[in-house]
Structures are given as C-alpha cells and as structure tokens.
Length: 206
Image 1 (cartoon, rainbow, N blue to C red):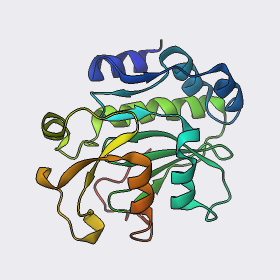
Image 2: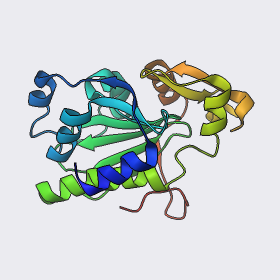
Image 3: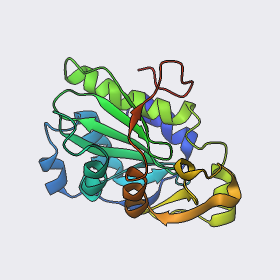
Image 4: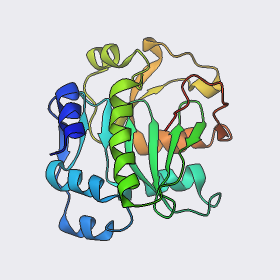
C-alpha cells in the first residue's frame, strides 16, 4: 500500500459496501485505466469511504450515466471511476489520461490536463484521492445527511429534491436517498453541461 492510500484510509476510515473486483474486470480495464487504480481495486475492491462520502466504483455499472452526460460529444473514451455522495463524478479518459470531473448537481465540468506517460497517470489517481480528502465534496451537508437519512448503499446517493437546477436549495430538508444511476441520468437531462469558469472557486486545479 502506498503512502497516499495509507493517508486516505486514515482520513476516511474503514470502507463500506465492499464489492470484490473479479479478475475479468481487472483484465478488461488493463491498459485502459491506470495501473495504480487497478492495484487499489485488486487490494480493496469497489467500495465507499468516509462513511459513503467518496466511492471507487465499477465503471461498467455507470456506462449509461457516462453516455447520458457526454455521449457523442468527445473524441476520448471515458470511464466513471469514482463519485461522491452528492453526485460529483470522476471520469477517466483512457486515450488522453485526463480526469473529467462533473458536478452533476449543478451541471458543471472541469477537464484536467492530459497525462504524458504511465507515471503521470498513476499520479493523477493519487491526486484524485487527495482531492477527495481536502475539498468540500460533502457540501457541508454530508454528516447531517448521513445522520438523518442513514448510510448509503453502494447504488445510492443523496440528491436534492427539487434539483438545484430547477430552483431547489442546497439544504438538508431537501435531500433524499436516491438510486444513483437513475438520479444522475435524470440530472443530465435538466441542463446543458457547462465548464467551470476560471474564477469558480470550486474548479479543480490539477
């Protein structure tokens, strides 16, 4: 286990919703996803961290989500490798080695720079874990949502009802536990995906 992942586990504690990764999946994504990520899969499986705040996921289960958000709009092939409890999505571009981050709850995206080699690709995965530890991906609502609504299952997320893009407000009383795939596809249909502006404080800087 490398240093970054050790710190990640110390920060987020024991995983939840553990799903072992079959050898067939490891073979399928070999040379498509970074070796560092596949090593994490092999050792720890697909699961949630921080009580369900951040999830490393099976990309095959989210192909319909990726297609609903960016299908036919990019020359790269993207795989959803991680997500937050509130629908911040992290997609890996297998050709460019870029991470496309989509904040589904307000339909904004940020695209990282491409990776020049396998070392840079592995470093990007570790940077993603650092991002999850240091940024407010819980929207200052996660602990209260978990206490009020309960722990998320691997296929669930916390969603705002009504959605923020329809005028809803980011308050605890507007959160529900929802099926992640269904809600993420629904969000993709509500507004056109737009880039973060350079002065958006929550845009990534990788």
